[in-house]
Image 1 (cartoon, rainbow, N blue to C red):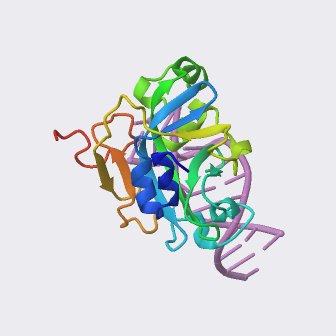
Image 2: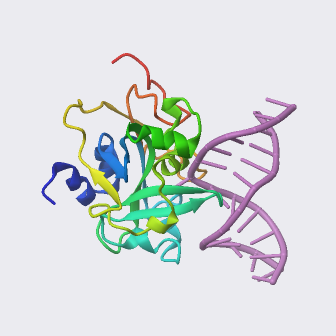
Amino acid sequence: MSDQHLRALELPVVDAARMLVGCTITHGETSGVIVETEAYHEIEPACHAFAGLTNRTWPLFEAPEIAYVYRSYGVHALLNVVVEPAGVGAAVLIRALEPLSGIARMHVRRGRERPTDLCSGPGKLTQALGIGLDLNATSLLRGPIVLGPPPPDRAAPRVTVGGRIGITRAVELPWRFCAAGNRNVSRPWPPGLLAPV
DNA sequence: CATGGGATTGACT
DNA sequence: GTCAATCCCATGC
């Protein structure tokens, strides 16, 4: 746990979600920079862990550094980074990436898409990177999915804060974090995403 | 045991 | 703007 970006895994989930914007996700030859996250915690009803320990939610209660991958709407695989100590159900949903490498492979998996639509959503990025339910509860330090530090040649993004989207409960919590000005963020864009700094 | 609802996306009106 | 696809789990009878 020496790298700076891995300290995010030891923070409260809301701080972790903010810190993970700018870090990288790699699976095989494909990778991208995280440009959008949301925090989920067992104390609020939008979190799967709110329902307690079940066959579906148990990875959320494990120690940090593992992935929580679940099926959404019976169709899509959604990727989360499990954080906070073992016994506490909390995770950061990875909602969008800016493609970095393996872009040709992403196009094979996703079809002909505008580059900014390859990974501009939680279901899209798992498809582009080839991440399936078989990777649920696997280590994000050892792989196959690897959480890495921000690219060294890249300035840290300004991060915008807003309410989480696609949910009906606890919508008032400002737990969605986006890299300001980055068009790989999923719709609806938060207010001011493209506003001049 | 039957039903309803999602941390979504893409196709269509 | 609407809607279907399709699975896991919570709720209620």
